[in-house]
Image 1 (cartoon, rainbow, N blue to C red):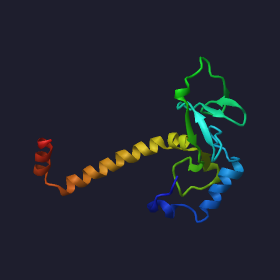
Image 2: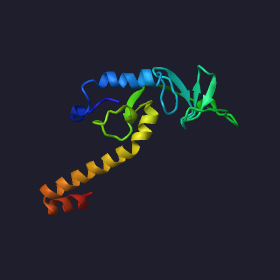
Image 3: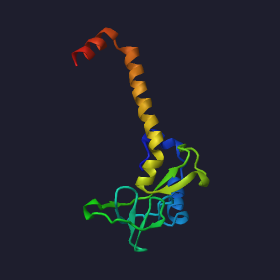
Image 4: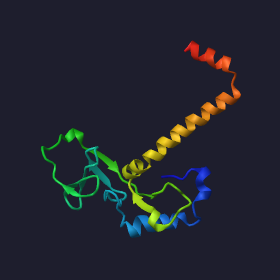
Length: 148
């Protein structure tokens, strides 16, 4: 995932090399959560199950071999281009210890970061409301809300 400009200073100067070491050497170009391969198109069912073309088998969202009981419709199969990113397990970009980093595909990274994203959304709404309370006339705000 791209680094936000305001957070760039939190990352070490050698972040590109550190991220590459985690993603390519330690993880072997595969997601450490679900084993999806880096820079490959992967067929999946949308619920975490995906087709591993190298092993010619279906895998779960944890990378374990599974069998699909009851089958599936071909229309439910989607294709995703997988790109690995280096994720901070504690969501702290200044903590770049090897044990705190994990190579994750887009899906696993978004699932891992979901609580942090929810908190960030709440914080942004809270800040906007606080600024509005500080700088807007409550009579104008009430009138504007009544017009809606």
